[in-house]
Amino acid sequence: MSKKILNKFILPEELKKTLDKVDNVTIPQSRQQLLQLALGNEKNNIFEVSYDVPGKGKIVEAAIAKCKNGAAVNYTDIYMRRRDPDCMVVADEGETDKPKYQDKYGADFKPLRDSTFKWLGKQDLILMPFMAGGQELGYPALLVAPDNAGFFAGGLSDLQGFIPQDEIPEGFKPKAIIYLAPPFRHTHFDGKQIVVHNRLNGLHELFSYNLYPGPSAKKGIYGVLLNIGEAEGWVTVHASTVRVITPYENIITIMHEGASGGGKSEMIEHIQRQMDGRIVLGKHTLTGEKLYIELTDTCELQPVTDDMALCHPSLQNGSKKLVVKDAEQGWFLRINHITKYGTDPHYEKLCIHPKEPLIFLNLDGKPDSTCLIWEHIMDEPGKACPNPRVIMPRRFVPDTVDEPVEIDIRSFGVRTPACTKEQPSYGIMGLFHVLPPSLGWLWRLVAPRGHDNPSITDSVGMSSEGVGSYWPFATGRMVDQANLLLEQIGNTPSTRFKLIPNQHIGVYKVGFMPQWIAREYMARRGSARFRPEQLEPSRCALLGYSLQSLKIDGIHLPKGFLQVNCQPEVGNEGYDAGAKILSDFFKKELKQFITPDLNPLGKRIIECCMDDGTLEDYLKLMPIRM
View 1: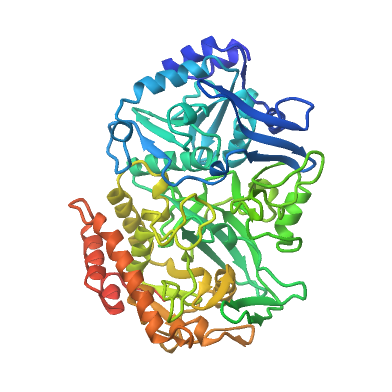
View 2: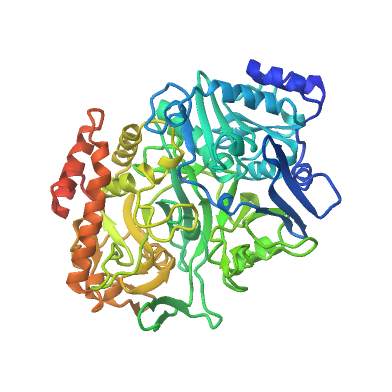
């Protein structure tokens, strides 16, 4: 790298001094160069990413196989194959509800920060500029990483794009910098995934002390956007978005939010069918009986976002609908549901025959072979890793929508366990529910992480992902994010709210079928409003309205799939016990938002929940547009 190129950057003094000590700095020019770095620039078909760790010797963090269709990355430490939800620490003195470095470790962050720069100064480095949040509305950012972590840089470039060496503008001044230093997780953090956020004046530093891209390349940049939005008064929501075109050419746009595992990526996937074309609506968990339906014509899907939807003020247009744009250039797709050939022909084709090589994680890829996305790496004999991933540049996905879109429906996904009279749970949600905006806001405050979550290390029982379901990635205060979401919902009354479960409806195992069926049904309805006789208040007020009936392509769904208490294995007894579990969970999670800084309307909505308010009470607080 020439000094002339480096002079294009306006960098903090610590980084400039660090770069002066480095022998080799690579500023990538092409995606192909990044993929070569990912494989160690060697002819070997297996490349080990390893580091010499004081007191521990050589530690191999990951092995990368060069496959015909890309690079298959596998972590030697099983713990590193999923995101740790407690990985974030804040080192600065700004306002935050997150754990502070000083409080957690009993020391100031500065000595470790200095040691990190010292370590980086002894490495050959990758310096990769990019625009966090997209080219048009994004913010200048930079990755500083050891050059043997090329797969990390390649993954980040696929997720956020990058600026090639010969296109770097003069005076490029990053507002965010990721410093990657993997050995420190062993020397300072007992092997844990830790990402330290340090919000300085005009610069957001992320010190990533691990190689899993989830907490830093993916969610760390999300945290940067949330921090900027908090200061400027807007939100990047945790959502997939899809434009749905029916066989009759009706068009509707759905944005699906939810905690990790809540079905965001699945909302933009095609409905899964059996080999004979039938669709399994659900499988009875006690008898094994399967219920089938047939849909001859399904909708055309045009994906807009997969996980991060930018709601920048400049996009809003006075339509009274929320307007969003993708905050990413690529998607971090979880493919644990693809367990055999033919499960999802769309993504199988994209991954087996990609336009360019891809980066795979937690898949059993063999050198010189094709990495098959249904062959997941084993965590232990007989137990596959629940979090296989592929990083898919959105330009490789057919029919993606690049321009901003107006949202007709905001749905929220919840992973639910099976529910019976004998073993009641919160799995009492029907195929989908219609919510007033007030309840739409409450669900986004409590954001249940839900049942059997494959994306994170802690997935036992019912817990909260936190406000907006993006709270694990935010650095500020919960109440500020709650207020921003309420303001956003209040400003977009023409966007309607739905609640959709996945995994179970009562006693039936359903996977992600509820959201696929709901998507088909809502698209066919288009802008038509529900008639009063089509809906009735749910037995549990937190679930808004339940459907009285649902017919799609001439097929009536069983009422037990719409109102779970109608399933004889659940009944009113099991339903009411599940409703209490849900109500208690809401009350426990909502207490923390009642502070003097909470929006007064938000305070009344939360008080309504605490007082076991009825659906009518919620409607009085914020009316609904059916």
